[in-house]
Length: 322
Image 1 (cartoon, helix red, strand yellow):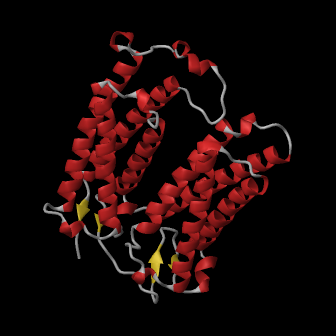
Image 2 (tube, rainbow, N blue to C red):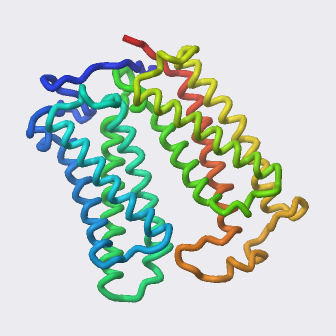
């Protein structure tokens, strides 16, 4: 049965369904005693403890450490804003669609905390000597994992069920848009060294593909968050299906060209990691070029699968505007 998506208005005098079997009270301190409110308190606590543990001993340096610290601080701040808006009953005055914003943020936060829980121990903690700082770093990693699970649980609780009236971002295609943009951001991080793709037209085309598809998916998200879908010259479902189809075709070319020109020696690639002299060195907060190329190839395949799933689900969605 297809999911029906529509816009609804949340007021401070009504309750909104959270997919938990009971309503969530908004505009009242009782919101904190509901399952979703308690879950957000756990998110707030776990991210606060994570960055506090790291900050107390200065256990972060370099790009990767800064990214993890930013992730925990950002997630803490936005979760605090969401709790304040719900406690004050300001959903109707919030500049973005409240049907779409919380679940969009929760999905991003789950991915951010997951990346921090993987990046922080692999690029930083394992190189630390035993002691108080390392203990704090390990504990921060554990709380990052807890935060990831808490945010993922919110996504599972509040996503659209078949036949349920909800915002687009709570549907499977909406959540896939979040995944697509997040994976693209990780790809851009691995492409931060231009030497990986410069002066090779086929690889530069792949980079253009990643950028174009990221922009298109981000536009779809922003249109929903700003409730601007009616401004499009074509119906929004048609726009989504066309976007997904175009992205599948573009990513299919990148999936072929990137590994071919990076790992096939006939096209100037390095088929084995041992051929990259920098990969033999052990550096914290450093990823050698061959590993960057491999990571981008894997992430390209992941995003292609996400876009294929997006195309399948987008073709089934029925949108009803009110």
